[in-house]
Image (cartoon, rainbow, N blue to C red; front, side, top):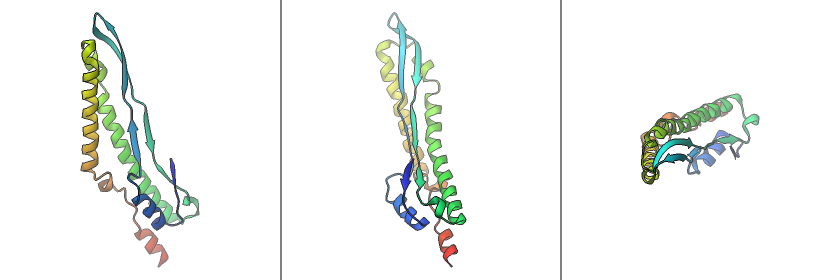
Length: 149
């Protein structure tokens, strides 16, 4: 989590809009293997992951409609970032089986190719969703406007 300062949705939306990414999904795939006679015989895949999400510092002082809108935005952002992790799972789910039987000298290249495919799919997902904007990752300031009237 990282803190987002602001007393109003407008202030928070300004901070969020100034950032390269409001949320971030990161992963670091790695593998280890055992071999026999120069051929990969078993593989262990590890994929440490981290999701970084915003925390509105002034959330508890905001009105219920503003908190509700923040919660809606946050869930949409969380769903978008989870979409990246779903791609990680789908692309790396069977890579261990793909590596078993490969010559040891080819294992890293095969793994790198799979990871490159994952990275391309993640980039395509961001392009398709406009980095989550089509999934509702914008803060609706009409809630704040309606409240002030």
